[in-house]
Image 1: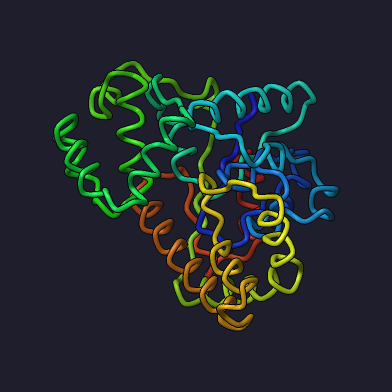
Image 2: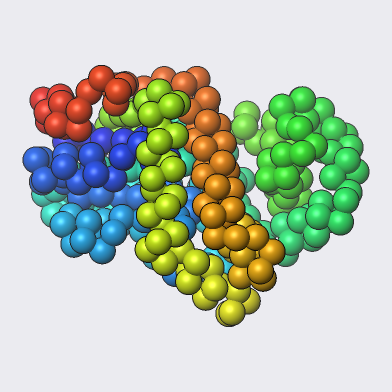
Length: 303
């Protein structure tokens, strides 16, 4: 079987453009690897490929889920495998592209079979956390999973809630689940991982320019639509939603919105880079040194 590529890296580094360039050279089709871009109605705030890019090359798992739907890493493995099978049946090359490291890790290394979600349980835990009981939730985690609690800070809302949610769903804590039989992609040994990296200063410039472009191209209207229709997107971690919501209420200016979104996106990219830098990849390219064409040519040789 032809190898699949998984192209990953921090937000704003140019993964989409590079993947499209590669797809044109190797008859590829692209599968999104992003926990936010998978949703409908928020293409601008989640930096989904543009309509022109979507027409250039066939994309999967981009803008396909309703905003009220949740997706676990286990669900994502099934979705990706089905798309890989479809692409291969069309005699094309699968190119997985995105910035969600957990999803990549699940595909390659696997994730425990109990990785499911329960919106009711999660809502109860989120409400409790937001009402100021984060320390109480952390104490609960420390009792049910002393080992995993050492890896979670009480202020890490998502990981803390997820750990307790998993326990309530499966009856096993995270440590026990990780030791159980796990599930990974049927194509895990055929996925060649490609990490795009860049200096922080170069990436920050790209993020700032992209933030301004997103705001100019309709991000405010996108948030206005979400607010008007009272859509719940808490599970999506839409960077800019709270800032633009404040702007719509007249609490901050448009310039302040841009600055706050830039800062949050920059912080998010920093966390991504820190995580990716601690992982192993088949190929790593420093985009301060290599051009897009250089990387594409090297990947074409690998294929």
